[in-house]
Every structure is written in C-alpha cells, then in structure tokens.
Length: 115
Image 1: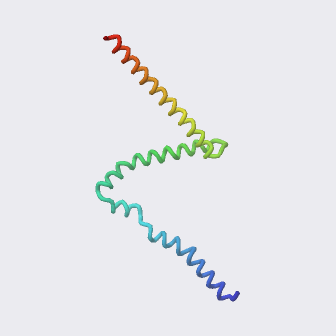
Image 2: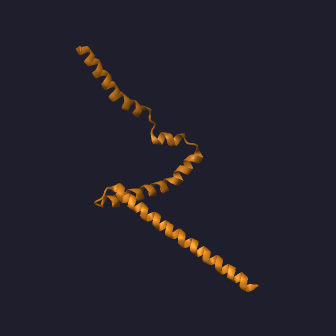
Image 3: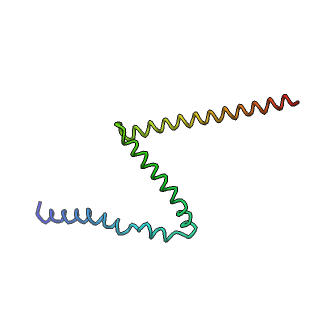
C-alpha cells in the first residue's frame, strides 16, 4: 500500500477514537442541568427520594464489601445469600399463614361454642 493510504487510515482512526468519546462528552448534559429542567413537583419528589437512594446504595456497597471478604467469587456468595433470604422469606410467609389459620380456627370454635 502507498504511504498516503496509511496516513488516511491513521487520521480516520484517530478521529474516530478521539472524536467519538469527545462528542459523547459534549452532548451528555450535566446532572445538575438536567435537575434544573425538571418541573418543580418532580424536583421535590427527587429530593425526597434522595435519602432512600443513598441508603440503598450504601447497603449495596456494604454487602459487596462483606461478599468480597469471602474466598469465593462475589457472584457465588451473592447467590448463596439470595437463597438464604428466599428461604427465610418463605419460612416467614409460612409462619404468618399458619398464624392466620390458627386465628380462623379459634374464631370458628368461638362461633360454634357460642351458639
């Protein structure tokens, strides 16, 4: 190939590699600028929910730190923790269901004995 073709390829490659990210950076609005464009009601709602989002994020980071202390990969530890949480949630649902059933039986016995 001729040297001119190499120069063209180098220039086009440089424009694509540098110009693409530069264009994205130029076009992407600043988060504060976006927030100012919200209507006042949405701004208020966003400010109210900020604390909740920050709390969830802090909990997420704390879990990641806890998972990273294990010798296993994070995704394996996270899957195991998720299984434990599902088992605990199922046990709690079963306990509540049994309690409701017991209450129904008590009410039914009271009604039958009262007649």
